[in-house]
Length: 356
Image (cartoon, rainbow, N blue to C red):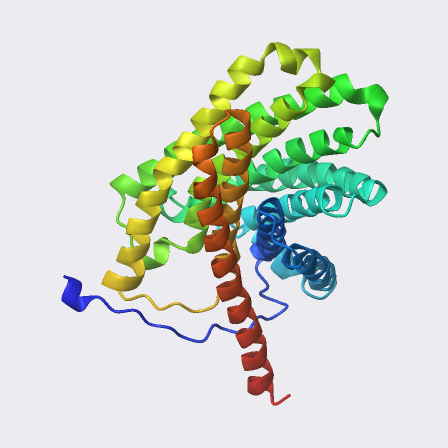
């Protein structure tokens, strides 16, 4: 079989406003977490460059989404009603949360971070109970094999991003009079996000093992199988790092620590499986590498695993985990550079096709 292995590359399709994927905000998620990972590991300059680049990404995508709503409202509504594309709107929630984290941790811009925290919470409410309600009540639905994929786990990522940003906002000293209720809310969001992961992963694992899979089915968002529990690990560690803000969290510290390690172990289990499936998709079945906005959903889990492992190493006093964190930071940087190169190439390709 090795003799038939081949690796192919193709130019990605240029983006169009009408068909812009709702999950494009994963680019902000990926860029933000790579910035935070490189900052944790003491890399200079690069994290700051990524922050400002991410600010441009976020602004550009907000403008693009607004223009799409104005010019192509039917296409946006069709996406909301689509079981595959609809969940992509959860990347808006997670992107806002990750950028809020950058504002707190990288720039110490507390006032702006609070605004992003409010926006993230509002986005979470609207997207969670809007998109999921639409998908629930629509009369015609796809079968399990066509309707469920790893992209659904961005629901978990969005929920945990609200939990993490809530705790980080409290760590700045603002809203000091609301520490107990907000820490309790962050705890509930963390637990609820973990329950969502178990519900969704049961369906995804069943789809994996009992339905036929084509190489196209194993799209990059399947890496969120790992990324969703990586951010759950980070959320648990963040709660424990700031448990002094809440007697309830402090009392539950042993339970939270055990569940945090549980999440990390699940994410770690997924990594070899995802690598094996990647070999099958790209080398054995020969599916070409070509730029797709969904690839950003594959970059984010690598950076998140690096960040959560770094925090877990501190939480458990386990310095032997730090080389793992460093290795995944490097992998995330390489993956980010590859995705960014594909994005630039797709824009150049778009200009060449239109004659600009």
